[in-house]
Length: 306
Image (cartoon, rainbow, N blue to C red):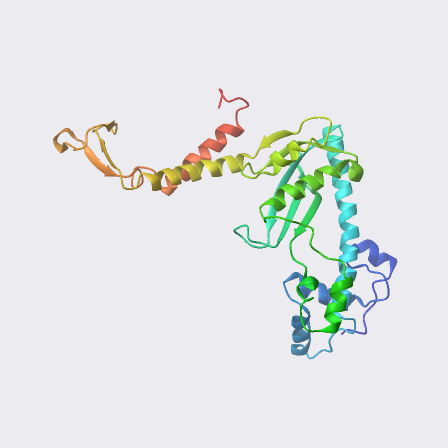
């Protein structure tokens, strides 16, 4: 299996599948085998185990060598794809001042992650093909540095001369702001464009940080994501339900709240505990309110009409 198929140094293969096109003569099936295992979260040990279960010899080229070749090809293809996305945005806006969407993600939740990624996408509008235009990877961890204190001469030598992977200082939450600033600063040199409109999730400090840097000769306009506005509305209502859970409310027969503390059943008055529950703010009711709230924003252009 690993020695009889055609090789990926053919020009036609490069045109058909650029991600798998690498320098040197490497068997296509070997490359695909490593790529497939890596894409489903496996590593070198899983490659060897799978090959053993299939009664096949392991790939001749080492796992790390394959990954380096795949990484190199993927980076080249990413540059081509993102450059094309920038050109499409310039055409769409008929200007080098374009609108982008910025968001960050982390390897772990709770702002305790050592690794984070900031992604910038073109923001062409509803029902448009918005594409990734830039990324910035942040890390506070270097595996080689973590080995330098081990009692091993070879590891100590490698750790002394290596290129450290750490490129971020501070908290994990700060990664999004720093990554966004880096992407905005290189937009002119990389694509000849300015990100003058910023669409974010509304609850991060990234926009504030970017705007305070005065990267361009014009201010950056903040745009709100309707989905995140809906999300904050729902969260506020859920918090209100939890906050008033133990409070008593007296209402009349028409459902109007009364200031009295004791209900008079003969007048149709009722006493409720909290504002949640049947015929009140249930989870289903809150989701319905969120939907109508989002629709009101999308269908109207001004606060008054909304």
